[in-house]
Length: 275
Image 1 (cartoon, rainbow, N blue to C red):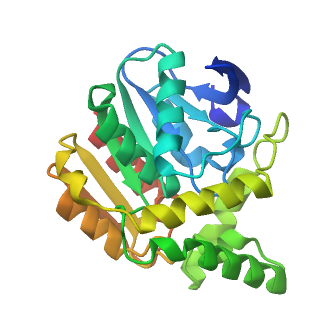
Image 2 (image 1 turned 120 degrees about the horizontal axis):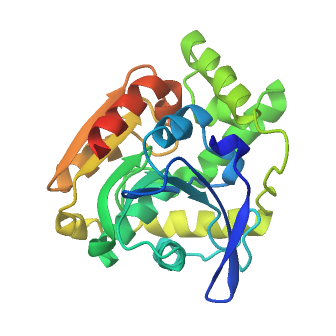
């Protein structure tokens, strides 16, 4: 079953309901998807997720306080990571692969640091290390993108996820069309309170210390566009430099959503990496 047709279910995580969807074939190492600032389940690109689910078990979830999950969104990446770990444990999984995008990439780094035996491999996309260049500015970039979208009648992701070239904007239109494929049982939108908590966590991450990245010995695929306006691309180079076992993929004429713009190429890289 494809993710855009998957049922939304909940599981009790230490007394809090966490909403999730799963796709693909159970067995083997499941891929846990960790999402971006403001995102809910409906923001995962079917082109990427369904491609992974053709040969893997894939699980997307709303972390605490997001979408249909209960509780209050934490104000630190470390707490978000601990909630994600608790969710993975509640599912009865003892070894997973991680695909963390943007804020989810921060969370993936902490999971690998705090519970190294839980993780086999991880992909970090459109993200950066603690203390990364421009990370603390993400809230201002978000506000600017929302303002430009309101003024132009476009979606904020036209400005935040894709370059302003004809190629980038055509990719944005295609991406947004894919996100609208799910017509029933759509997720609840994220609350302003949760967005504020996420921004607080991101700002603190941008002031953090990346020195512990050298302790992550898992295989890591770092991916980004060459002109990321939200998590500046230099941060992906820095991740690849600091992580002992990393490979780097940079897509041309692409911004924060490079893995969605080049979904076919990224999917092949991801499948090769997880194989």
